[in-house]
Image 1 (spheres, rainbow, N blue to C red):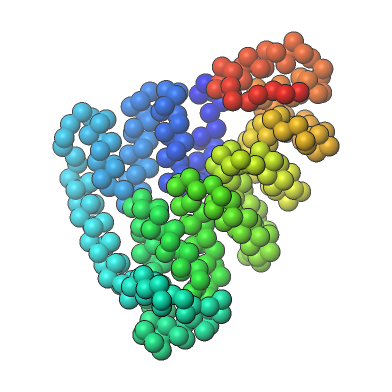
Image 2: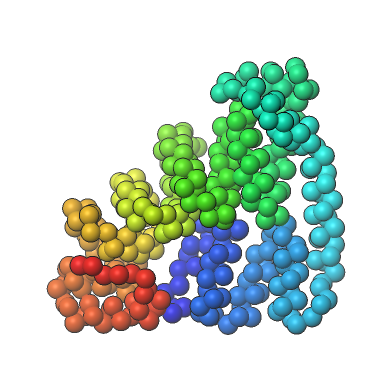
Length: 321
């Protein structure tokens, strides 16, 4: 099974918090030794503020109630930093908790900034503090609080780059909370910005599209209409070019979507050509199965590849050809 595991290719294109569900998946299916997965979790957690979780895994891994001193010290730092950020953001957080006051906010950001300054003595410093507080909450694993604050921050932020960063954070939080409808809305909003924004270089824009497609996998393979929408996104010229240039492993997911979706036959023929073009850079039992059936007409070979699919945990792919 591990032979076809794409986690090492996918993980660098995800926020580190989005890697946790992948490690959980691998651990549940025992694709790697449990000790290896637990060590990977601790390594990942060390780069977040989820210190308590890291401590629990350390205890489980080494069968002890003791934890390293650096973890204890790190926890003290996280608690102190959280308290400081909470105090800095308190004026704006208190305002946002006042439903009557929030109703005064409008779509006009300049009006909002002026109103907050004149009536509540809230300025750019407190708005920036809200972003830092939301980001820290996310790093602590409080995805619900982070999503709420990032949403409010974007309603006040006038810096387009910072607003884009907040949108990425909110998308990650919604994915981690498995709010698939909201996550899909944020995904579409982010796509619109990426496609229309002026980036410092074309490759920067391509990289943003690659990140977006990787993050979208969580949504498309959980949302009711996701198998259709992944085709709509990945099969667009700009996104398909990004796949072929920098992320050919994403062909697996597009292939799976085509297989389980009967209504995409016209696009499917063009996709078979893509599989042929990418044979040297990427292939797996799913893409090889399609090559056997639609290119080589090798049905014995197709059966063999299908068995490999089953052996490599591809049982969810229902072939309806």
